[in-house]
Length: 380
Image (cartoon, rainbow, N blue to C red; front, side, top):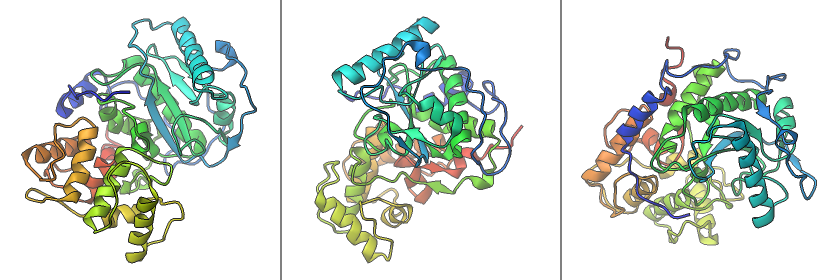
């Protein structure tokens, strides 16, 4: 899928988010879960989810395998047309279209994602046994929605294409309800909600949708009545040997800034994996066997930057900001456009708008989640 320009400025997206009821006090908050650190529960009311039988799904071509390693949620856009048919019939047809594409064209055994949300707000089971796994919280079907994440991430597709417009209110309300139930059933906090491009080489979930994620996470945390103390200061993405795209390019530029000779091609090549291991060893960090960029690794790599800086570290930030639609050119100089883009990104994530990259700002830039996004928890 080709990557197009970003038409909505980040401040414009914040205004759009407020208009569609995603801010504090906006939209309908769901039934609150018990306060405190999130723990797995059973018996959630998932009757609103249309199961595979309810949309006449084809049987999978092979048995569904399962995993008990669920520790995150990955949100997607289908890149289907932005229909104004919000009916249940359209939602059922969507689920069937996706399954046919995934089985007949992609050659997968079943629908790739676990759940689908239609523009009309209907929630449908995707891969068989996903609803069974959700209801018990003890397993997830091994899926096919994000390379390298299919044994540990619940995948949610959202009908539509969100490069220049945001999802419908009905879709967002239902997505929050589903996110809340997935978090509850699997014992996850709202700080475990990511986007597809945080791990893979893709333009999904879209330039206009992704900026809503901090508010989606906040709204989910409110619905969970999540204890603010349970939210880490920073939750970094953890790319590894199966990851690709902008997240890997950023890692590669940061490694180059440390003197390692790697190509900035977005591929976890052998040279990149060796450089990650060497960097971890040189800094007294646990050396990952599969190249995982752990939180301590990120925090050692991502040194503070500001106006006047130049070189590969600046390219690391600029390449990521440009990929996400900010108006910057990856020229290696921390120029005025970079300052403005970083300030917009900081505003989006509730960080001080300095225009300089400290550790928290680096985390938010590369797709991580910062505690500042949840500063309004408990506000009335």
